[in-house]
Image (cartoon, rainbow, N blue to C red; front, side, top):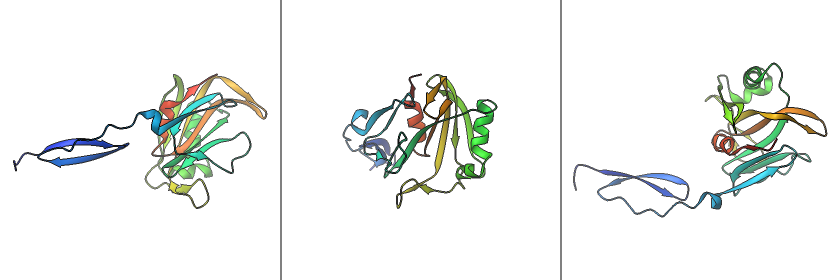
Length: 183
């Protein structure tokens, strides 16, 4: 065997594996994205997102609440007000309340466009606790994104200028990339 090894990235389903050796293994093609994800629209929040196909609706959310979970993670959508501008609201969500401790002592905030609109992504620090979104379910670190609607949405309980996307650290970025605002 040669002292030089060939390295190949092999994709089985959606998990990348690293193979080393004189000959790389032939890998089956990864399934098309539509086989592993589903796209859902929430009419009251005027938003469409793509999530893993295996996820189910969170059973004990209130009427009109939008949330899904599975063995690999979870996500919820909500609407919120914006006090003092987007930057202030994102920083306050990340560090300014007792509830923000779910992001750890040093969360990382990135300001970015989400579906072409101003937004932010709050990623937990390493010390953030892991929480279960359903009783006896798997535990994950929580992350969050906020995005400004083009115009505030109106629901039965108010007028809301921000979409809030909560989810686990491992799924928040692809979910945020999939967001489409319809308002």
